[in-house]
Length: 347
Ligand code: SF4
Image (tube, rainbow, N blue to C red; front, side):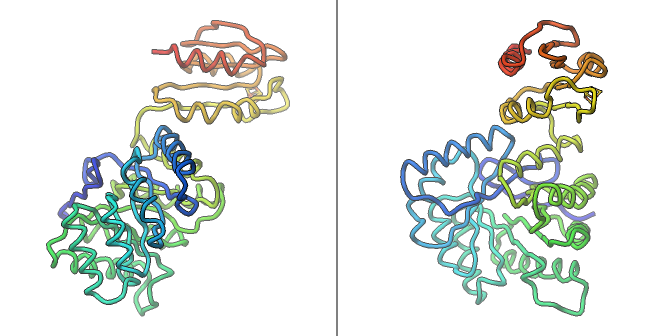
């Protein structure tokens, strides 16, 4: 059995028996103006209410120092600085008060530079993610998963020589099987927490399918402590997908579970349009409820009877069900308000 390690990121512990955390990465440069920063803070609040636990930012230059300092102070969730090449940026980000930095020691350069980062992270109680992507490793004679694991173990040994154990490892590839095999192999050899993700996974459909196939198999074996579903798209969708994956695997409880009909020739109510209009609200509600949105009288009432709250549209009317019982008939126009009110009132 591999000995387990625990990493600490702000108020979170990562390790065996600790909750699995969802993270995303801010999709733009760090803004510098106060108004933009406040609007970013609002967005972080929404992401957190959707189930995001950790937010990562690129920290590429000294020009970002003041804004990043402010973000580290005000962010509602732990902040990670993503650093490439320049060890001084890592030292500056740590000084700003971030809770974790992500580096690939291989692109920081000389070992003494990496040692400087490790020393500062230790002094400031900041975690380090050793982030290795298959694309950034030199090709060797060994298979890529072995190469990735060996590199990670080498870097962990550097860190341990500096008496630093607050490490997380990520082994990512755009190839699903390489990602799966690398993480599986690592977990057999080493007990440090793993951040999981398939990198450069494409747009929503391809990313969700590829990530679910790789991460779902790992998580079901108890492998993985944080995850990101990398999507060429909204970071809100990344968080939604990450949370949904954990819920589907039974690794996260709570939140609204949406049941909705795919529509067919019998639909007389635009369940698709309705779901689109209300989904963002549903994703940020912290109640453990099943909500069904159905399109006709054939399956609607039946599904409604299994849900905590449901609506079934029939023609110009929408029927609201609470705890399986018909409670109100409302117009299509007022259906969203009625649904949200029923959720608000639900115990
Ligand atoms: S609920 Fe009605 S409209 Fe929706 S898929 Fe089922 S039969 Fe079709």
